Image 1 (cartoon, helix red, strand yellow):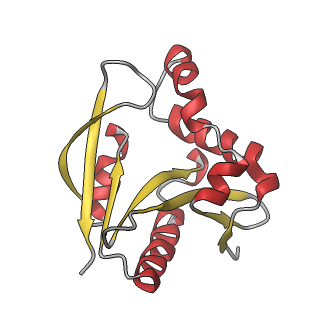
Image 2: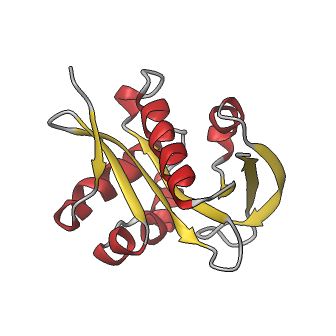
Length: 154
């Protein structure tokens, strides 16, 4: 199977939202939690056009990652989404998308990436070289904090 890493298309918002929701749910979250996260995980045309949304496509989209926004006053950027189809986790899709992010960061002169991690994904991000640098409030659940992580690329 050949997997192409390509930019997401504006007409793929429903596919990417479904992928994001299924990936998040695979971490064991219940319906109430998922309902609270729905707005934050909904992929819109504005989100696709506001960052660099990349997908792993083999006729079906198996994963996505969003790089951006870029911080204009620094050489840093944020990863705002990183989701893999639950049936395709631990099969190399995340590493393919990560390679694209590293390529794009190098092309743009980005030397530091940050992200807010789901606690279940911390081990994956650590394997990619990220370190936990603190905590940040959840974008969906009042009173919940999640790990904030960063990687220095150079």
